[in-house]
Each structure stands twice: as C-alpha cells, then as structure tokens.
Image (cartoon, rainbow, N blue to C red; front, top):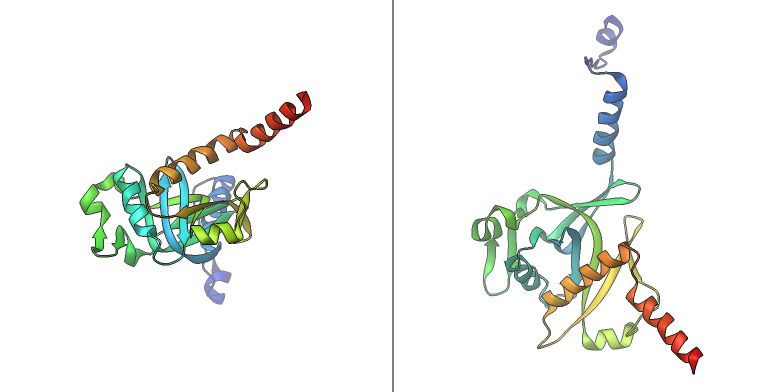
Length: 209
C-alpha cells in the first residue's frame, strides 16, 4: 500500500476469490476493449435471431422494421447500429443512446416505438446472426444467382455473417419473406439444408433414369 501511495498507483482489493474476480474482469475487459464499428441499417430481433436489415436508400428498410414490430418482433436500432465483437465468434449490436427506441419512417417522421407499442417492442441488445440485404429486382438479376449453391456471407469485424438477398418490388410481402429467411436460417443451424437436400434428390432422380 505504501509503494502504491508513493507511486500514485491505484490499488484495488476484494473479498471475492481470485478465480471469480478473473472471470468477472475477463468479461468486462472483453466488452470494453472489443473491436467496434457502426453500420447503417435496421437491427431487429426476429424470432430470437439478431437480424441486420441493410440495402440501398429508399427501399423501405425502416418501413419493413415497423411492419416486423407490428408482427410482435423487436427493434434494437434504426439507422445507426453499434456493433462490437465481444468474443471470438460473437458480435453484439446495440443502439446509440441518442436514437434509443426511435424509428424514422418517411412521411411519419420519428416514432417512439416503446411509447407506441410498449416495452416488449424494443430490445437493449442482440447478437448479430443474420444480414438481410434488400435489393431492386434488376440488381438481383445482374449480380446474384437465383439459387446460389454457396451461402452468401458478409464480413463484419472480421467474422463472416450469413447473408440473405431479398429483391424488393411492388406486391411482395417483404416481412413474410424475411421471417421465412430467419426460419430457414434456424433450420440450417440445426443441420437442415433445403437446397442441398433438393440437389441430392435431383441427382438421385437423374441416376434412376
């Protein structure tokens, strides 16, 4: 204590066991020192999965977020999403304090989602599991395969995140398509790959011929 006082070094003490203190400090420091980035989009909790909705301006990302909220999903952040890699295989997304609970919709302005829909319509944080990228039909046809054999991914803070491309056009219910994409993602986590199963079935059928 005398040496710390003489050299102006903070000295902390605790009655907790050393192993427990080390565990607490590891979690605390991993979050405080995590690599961070801010991305443009709408971050949602859809069926318990953290989904980042991205895409070109004017495609209705915030409107899609509002429809998902009305379907009992939760808003984490709109417009600016703060992402931090808090573990080797884990990215956590939060909302900047200034934008907490707010969603901007063209024609309506800023909406306080918590005040309108209640406490259960917002989330403090979610782990990023899926990126849903909205594109125009022309962009999809020019840049993406209709049935990609390999899954799309997007690198976020050095970690590959599964990415789904959804074309936007009049008459399509994007909220239903996004929910289906999330359900399909959950199936793939469980080891069920519909496209791979279809291709195997097709090969067997061709072999029988």
